[in-house]
Image 1 (cartoon, helix red, strand yellow):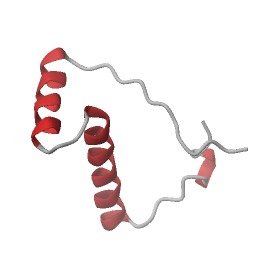
Image 2 (image 1 turned 60 degrees about the vertical axis):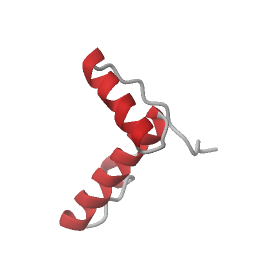
Image 3 (image 1 turned 120 degrees about the horizontal axis):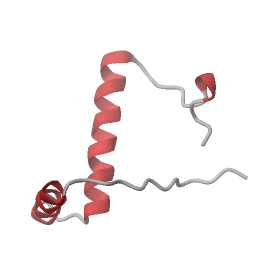
Image 4 (image 1 turned 180 degrees about the vertical axis):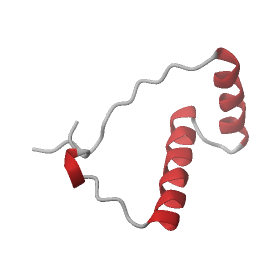
Length: 63
């Protein structure tokens, strides 16, 4: 059975965390939702420029 969600631990400088928290609050999101928004935007822009990503290609979709 495949998991629908994956966990990502992230270390970052305190100043970047504080700024991200500020931006997330400003945009009405939690920090987690803000990070997911940024990741989704990055993926969308990459695929727009380079074509769709097949996560199973070369086994990269396996965790």
